[in-house]
Amino acid sequence: MKLAVKLFAAARDLAGRGEVEVEACPGADVAELRELLAEQLPQLAALARRSLIAVNAEYAADNKPIAEGDELALIPPVSGG
Amino acid sequence: MIELTNNPIDIPRLLERAQQPAAGAVVFFLGITRQFTAGRETAELAYEAYHEMAESELAKLEAEARSRWPLVECMIVHRLGVVPLAEPSVAIAASSPHRHDAFEAARWLIDTLKESVPIWKQERWTTGAAEWVHPDKAQILSPENARTVSP
Image 1 (cartoon, rainbow over the protein chains, first blue to last red):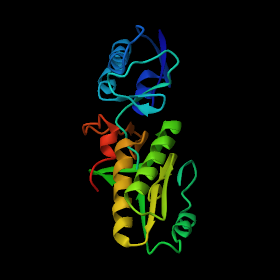
Image 2: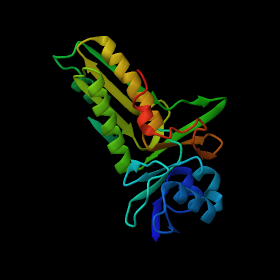
Image 3: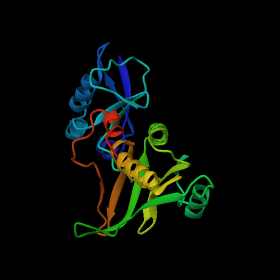
Image 4: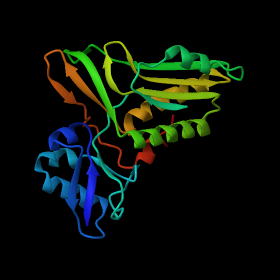
């Protein structure tokens, strides 16, 4: 399944765009998505591995399964305030 | 009340709204752009958010603060885009019948916002260099933890 993942801050700058598409096996979970991002976008690997993933605008645990059509985002360590 | 804005934060409006007859104390916190960090000089900061999620995370913070402390008003406003030196990027106002609760709530709100709300700052140094801030601190793997830390 094709998954679109939103990118922010340094992740967006490293990828050169605000959203990337990755190809994942059906039934992939959040941890697998993070690894796919790191493999398919090597320049993003170090940051992706210390980022959280949001599914439908909620932080998701590593074992959460992803469905086609979910809104996905890579959330690098936050620095608001 | 929570708000993300691209405009300067309207401090008088927030202060006025926090001053309700049911409150006996208002604690008002501003986070402002600091000129020097570890000897490097900042020209300005720029903030970006995962807008929809930042709003929902801020709303959760307000709801949890209201469930933990008897707050009359609870306001969190974060500015996005460029924030010049000495201008606020974030404002927190908590009012309660007695000061202890307002102090605790305001402290918890800003500490938790900084750990869990998907907003990022970019340092724009006077040298012309710019860098996103992604702290090395172990990121909270379960954001719920951030919201259950004892005040």
